[in-house]
Image 1 (cartoon, rainbow, N blue to C red):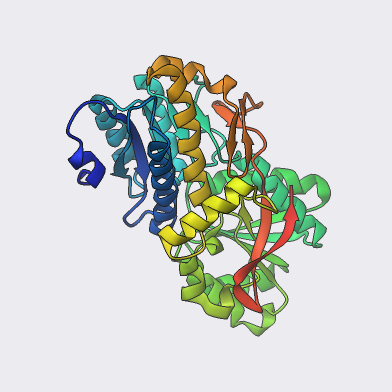
Image 2: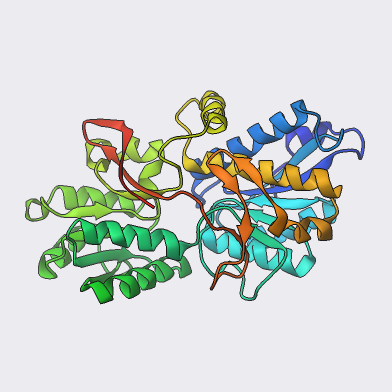
Length: 370
């Protein structure tokens, strides 16, 4: 079932608006908090575009659809949004869902600027219709592997669930760590209870455990089990996919959720634009904005710039990806072709490995940066 029309959609009284379709996970099993942050960034940027005159005098309008982390639902939403006449698609957080949306966008000839999904193979074949702001998984997870190696870890266990995304992450880690003497030990969470993970870690002499599993469960239960096992007092728990980024993590885990390194796509210092947007997002969200909220804002900033030049023409919008040069909240955004990546890619997304400070859980410590 589709999300009811947004307020801005319902209030539209004529056909003058330039419409962007927004794909966002807003209900379970989607990562709802990530979806809320993504939508906050999208909406803030739309508001600012309209306050500055819109798209050559025409208002910009979001048409929001909830994907609920369901690839089929996302593909159906793309079909619907294309029929509604949107000029472009924006958003999505979950990689497997974004892949389904990208395939439909390519088939329909609908420009799609993907905000957050990182799976390298976002489309099966090269496409001119899709561009992406988030870094490819291979780049981010290799940086995470560098962090593990620098910290002295060579026997790394991954607690993994079945997923194209998790399998891809495991492969990236294994391929990158092996030449450096690192070993990746896979723990199949279909067969293991969280408490049994502890015995496997001891038996395999692992010094790090990476959570390649869903949030909140089984991630939260695994962390609690490991933290309470005295045999594992020295083990590092990591979450490259970013589960500890959001406040729900700290709420559910308290002190147990600190000192768990994860990937975050922010620069060490925000630009003046980024700082201004951070303040506005904090007010909108009533909490500190995650990097996902900045991704949402930057998505609309790029699309608005392109649409002003091409009058919402879909083909001309897609043709413009290689000419984009937009100042975003996290740096200047330009797209290029990256070897092994089938979509137009922002090649220089800032990447950090951070964790929550055990002494102050709402503060993040930068442990490693690209």
